[in-house]
Length: 272
Image 1 (tube, rainbow, N blue to C red):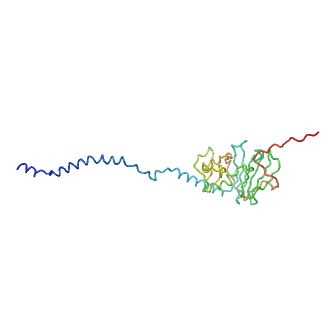
Image 2: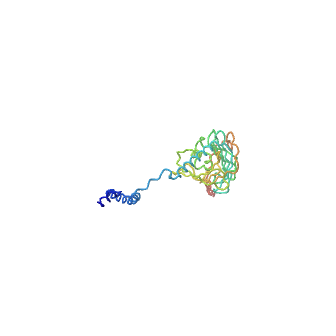
Image 3: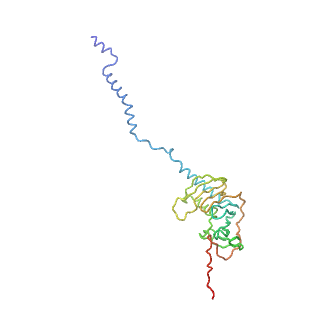
């Protein structure tokens, strides 16, 4: 009777005590099981927010440079640049960009192996090379027509200094051109925003020289360091004229090559 009463007075029946014991074991084992499953689970893929921001920065630099080059195409000025990094001393290059779209670039020592000065100009009448009076060419200025206004200067006649102010601006504004553009630090004393420009194709004739290009917000080129040398803006630009004049009259003559002429054969037939 006492044992029966004890069983009846027990607040937890025997079958429930067994259930509690099983549940307790599961509670103790569950953290270990979850830890094992978590350890075997592969790491989640990175989210979009963790992507490398470099491509976005490169695209932004390309867009910024294209906008500055477009402003440069619409910029009408007369400016003087110091050309260094080439054979010979520093030289002053004069750039004229006129309101009617004509242009002229005067390059001291630009032809005949650096001994003669030259001016390249594109006017409504075509593309011209003008020889200027200088040590290697003491004659008065005269201009030879090279072709139509938008023609390229033949390689053997090309001093290359005019390109950053003319056809390379079109290259920089064309997003289809295979270029890689990134921000660059401005050299000491140079104003404006600078960019490092590289080509992304293996062409033997790249569309422009790779290097550093710096522009003011209004499109004024302040600095170029490339294979052609280093051009640095030498002072505040002045306004551009209505049209770019030629340096002299048009003449019927051979254009001047950039290389020094070969020495003439001074050996002649002897006299008896």
